[in-house]
Length: 535
Image (cartoon, rainbow, N blue to C red; front, side):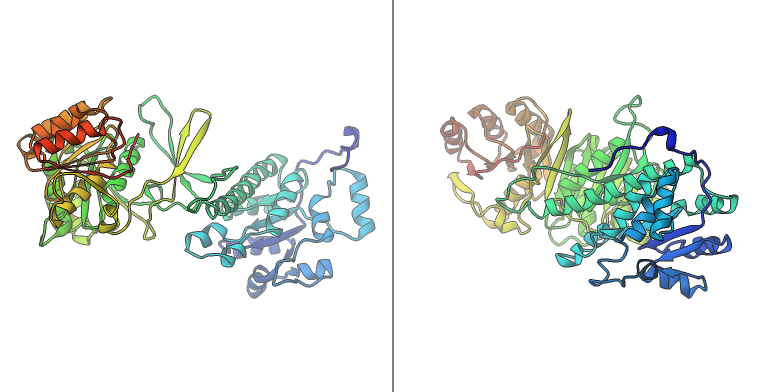
């Protein structure tokens, strides 16, 4: 427990604090030598550790090793370096109090006026794919302790946690010291820095407990940093910003190669497009409008340019809705695909890469936004959604990576089992259905959507919408429903349109009525045993 606060009358005012002694220990060496040179020029004693001290000394600047201050050599492979009273006494002494000043003199401890610390690269190590002890060793202990100590004592000490602050600190050193306002601002950044760091560590440990059958964490911490302030949100009167989450590998981490600034709705649609295209194993393209697919397709057999073929087939599903859409491809965008898009107004294209020749074509469409996904893109294991006053957490809804495993547990309840080509088409429809807002109905032919019904408050209307959009293409296609048919009427709409096979979860109290309707029409029907709602 902390001791009682001193009588306010005992505190001496300190505004500008001259910098005579600085503690410098950084993982990120950016700008370090410029800062060290400025400190040396101003006659500031630099106390440092390990590789930081070696870097400063190699540049010709005088450095006092922490071990020379503490009288104890670094130990335990560097795990213990700065955790010592002669370091933390110098950080925490409130020199507005004569008694603190006296205690330092009695103990032979010199105070610090500047602390420059950034922490071990924990987040970067996690993102690199490292595992286990390699990550644990990047959990900084002494660093956060020094940062928090200096930040608490900002009345006397300036704490710097980012090279971005070096220029202003150098100016202050040359001007005679740091001001209280400046030190308070630096302290606020420091506490935010350590909070974000601890959140990233806690999130990593929580992620490690989220395996199959494990309980969801009692406490959930999410670290996110603002990437950009957006022009507005879903509507022009709403403020908005995009944040990147530590350890994320999706749309928020994509690199924009060209085009106008991304909007809030662009990000939402781009994420939905990614969800649709990356469920597929074959080269595939999804076209999204208002977070719903207006076309999803895989490449035609033996296509010379698979990704361009997939795009054309996706576009054919609903060319009207594709106008002003957002496109995601699960393979490199080629010159041929770029040429096919020359006369189609498109807001955003998301892909793992773009051929240089394709980028040249897209330069003529200056407003078109191109997003290149990070190399380590992968679907998230968990799905987080904000609700009023809190958030929801669930396992991500994912399919097996291979096509065969998707249907291995399906139950044939009507008709004959289709041949391999027809089964592949049914699997495509089932996977495409997951990307459609509920109630969702997808009609597909030759691994391409031909009709999509989404977002209706009853399944019959979704069936009618899908059939209407498919038109003549409905005959001979297959259908997928994201959840069971509560009555036979929805399935009957599909059957009357000439559907040859239906895949659905099953589980309704009227399943037998639905199956009877399929049997009477000679339509194949599978129960999957699981649904894929997407709200």
